[in-house]
Every structure is written in C-alpha cells, then in structure tokens.
Amino acid sequence: MSAIRTPVLIVGGGPVGLTLGIDLAHRGQRALIVEERVDPPSHPKATLLGARSMELFRRWNLDAPIFAAAVPNEQPYYIVFTTRLADQELHRFRSPSIDECRSRDPALAQRFRELQWSPYSKTQIGQQALEPVLRAHAAALPSLELRHGWRFESFEQRDDHVRAQIVELATGRRVEVHADYLVACDGGSGEIRRTLGIRRNGRGRMRSNVSFFFRSRDFAAVHGRGLANLYFVFTPGSFGVFTAIDGVELWNYQCYFLDPKVSTVEVDPVDILHRAVGKPFEFELLQTMHWHHHQSVACSWRSGRVLLAGDAAHLFAPTGGVGMNTGIGDACDLAWKLDAVLRNWGGAHLLDSYESERKPVAIRNSLISAMNSDKIDMVMAETPPDIGAPTTAAAESRSILARKIKWLARQFNSAGTHLGYRYVDSPIVVPDATPEPPDDPAQLTPSSWPGMRAPHAWLRDGRSTLDLFGTDFVMVRFANDVHAEERLRVAADRQKLPLQIVGLDEPAIASLYEKRWVLVRPDGHVAWRGDELPAELDAMVARVRGATPP
Image (cartoon, rainbow, N blue to C red; front, top):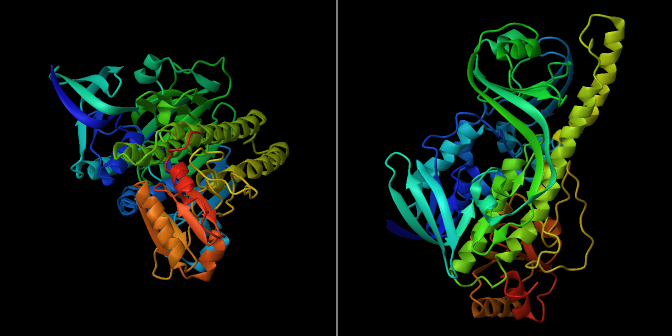
C-alpha cells in the first residue's frame, strides 16, 4: 500500500471541510480533503449564509461569486406566512436584499440596523450552489489537495501523527495517509466520532420532516405571492415551509410532522405539495429527503490529534439557519490554531482552546435553533383545522394566528445570533473585568470586549475594519506611543507571535473600539484590550498564543 504525507487530513468535503482546507491553504499550510461524493450535493440542504460566514468568506474575495450563485441579488429577503400558500396571507417579514446590503445607503442602515453591524445580512444560497463555489476556489489553491471519489476507511493514532487508510471508489486503490492532524468534517453520522467513542448531549432527535426538492416554472404563478425566500404554511395537515432555491424554478418544501405517531415513510408528494399550495400545479420532483430536527453537541471535540468540526461536533434544527454557519465558524477558529501549532509559534495549550471556545457557541446556537423550532411548532399546534374557511369565526382565528406569527417572526431578526457569539472564559483571551455586553439573538451590541468579534465600521478609505484582520494578530492602536509600540514588537518577536500594528486616527472608530489598544486574533476575535499596554507583555503574549496552562 502506497503512503502519502500531509500536515492536515480533512475527512468530508462539504462547506465546513472546504472552508477549513481553504483557510489553511491561505495560511500556506498543506492539507488533503477526502470526500466520497464526486459531484456537489443534489439537495440544497442548508440554504442560508449568515453575516459572520460572509465576513469570513470576504477574506478570500468569495463574496462576489457567492452572490452570483445566490438568489436574485435585487430581491428583498421576504418571509411570508400563509394559511395555504395560494389562500390567505397572515404576515410578511422583510430583510434587506443583497444589493441593498452592498449599497451602503445610510437611510437603509437606519431602517435595517444589521447593516450598521456588518457589510452583510442574510445571503440565501443552497448548499448545492455554495459547494461548487468553494470547490472551485479550493481547486485553485496549490497547497490544498482534493480527492473526490475517495472513501475514508480507518485511522489509528501514533505519538506524533495519525495513520489513516483511504480508498478510491472507482478503482479500489488504497492509500495510507500520514497526517499530523485529522479533522472529522464527516457529518452527524460519521464514523470518526463513533470510533473515538464520543457521545453527544442535548435533546437529540426532535421531530420528523420530509423535504421535497422540485423544479417548477408554474409554482410562482400559481400561488401569486411574488418571490420570497421562505413561505410558511399554517394549516393542519399541511404545516411546513417552502424555500426559494434559485428564485426562478428550483424550490424546496419541508413538510413538518408534528404528530410523532404519523408515519413519514409512505408519503405522496403530489398530494402534500398541492395541499400546501392550495392549488394543483405542474412540478418535477428532483429528490425526497427524510430527516429530523436535532439539538445535539458532542461531549468532546478533540481526542489527541483528531478533532471534530461541523455536524460531526453538533446537530441543529434548521430554524434560524445557524447549523452550517456554526460549522464554518468552527473551521475558521481551528484553521489558525492548527497553522500556529504547525509553524511552532502556537503554545502547547492552543489546540485545547478549540473545544473550550467553540463548544459553548454550539450549545448556545443549537439551543436558539431548537427554541425557534419550538415556537413555530407551538403556534402550528394551536392552529384550528378550519383556519382557511370563509367564515367569520375563521377570520377571527386568522387574526389571532397573525398576532402569534408576528411574535414568533421576531426570531428572524437573527443578527445577534450570527454576530454576537463570544468566547467567554477562553484560556487564550485576556479578560479585563468589564461587564459582558448583552447576548441578544435579535440584535448586536458592538464591542471590543475580550472574546467578541472585533466590530465592523467603514474606514475613510472605503474598507471595513474587518479587512484589517484575517492573517496575523493585529494590534489596533488609537494611541501614538512609539516606545510602547516597540516594546510590543519585541515581546511578540521574542515568542514568534506574528503581529501587525495598525494605527487608526478616526474618532468614531476609536469610540466603537472603546480602548486605545485592541489586540485582534487571526480569526477576527478580540484577544486583549486596554488603554495602556500591560507591564508584563510577555505574559499577555504567552496567553494569547496558548502557551499558558488554563
């Protein structure tokens, strides 16, 4: 059996595995991605990129190709709530379009507060459209090797590396891979977590769903609601949500089965889709998928040289569009830490911080998603059977239902969920004893509080402050102190910490960043802040690079 050598072996070439490989490659690290599928998934699966994921992809200039593959950019982000789709509309929720996000219009920023917090809002793109964008970018990176059509079979850990066996499905050819680290991005049912014996905690499997992915040019004309991103249906026996996949002819319907006693195995897509719309229409069924809502987080995210990321580490309900985005966050947290360790400037405890930072975020986000699902299920369960009837009693029921929907629709103000997570009590973040900003799923309190994402603001030259970060540690200084700056450079050089110092003379941004010195990590999160540099600079540098025991 032939053998190959790579610093990082990534098992799973979905969005999380590709993001991890791309991030490593942009840092100059070699990595190998092994993925059984030759083609991108045919089913859209996850369909939303949150603002933080778009900020992370912005570092590699991927926002433009992602927008090109997304729903029509001029279309406002609408969520429509109906009895049946072609019957009564109950409520309509609006977020800015992609073009509106890019316009930097001050009036729009006043109307949609999320545009003050990030260059991005919601970007609707199915996994079947996102993955080709990531694959194309990954294929152009010389240090990243993609092996599609290869199956990961087994692994064993040695003291200084992992040995894994992979097989090419088309030929049966086997190759042994020697890697410094193995990262499992192989999904919720992947074998790596099972082999390690890692359990999951949480609510586990919640309720059953069936998704119908279909093509129809007739669909939009039949229901007459105009183009929206999501269309919720609130009629007993037809609970669910339609999702626009390309905004033209590709659509998906998630049929919710609130009653656990009802079988989801034998289903009639024609009956279900026609009842949900309220009218017959022509469609081509492309794929049917049976699945469940989940809320589960792995008890451990690391075993020696093997780490878990994405669905291998956590499973979500789709309500809120947070699952894939959390996995993308995992990848970008892990990438700079693996790079630091492989380059020998990362401390002995740096990789341990991956779990201590990302696991609480996964718990937070999965609970938010589960609670969103609970709210929708509760309102659906209280919907009377005759909700769409042409009677006075039904009209009164629709009025009551509309009020409930307006209440639950607040969950779609999710900027705080995507942008507001922070690494509390992280062993590689230096606290400053100031009160923690509110953690509100609906809105963000921008802050340089240690552990939070460094705030976005537009610089005079047209860049975002976010464009300052992504490669090395960056000390943003709003003070002109040559002696202090030299002390900092010497301390960083002594411990080989890659550091840039960026001076800003913009009062509004100085106010937003709150302190005169703010140290930002390669992933864009604040590691330390203060009005003066600490007397013990060596201790601060040691902590942020993971050299200090937790």
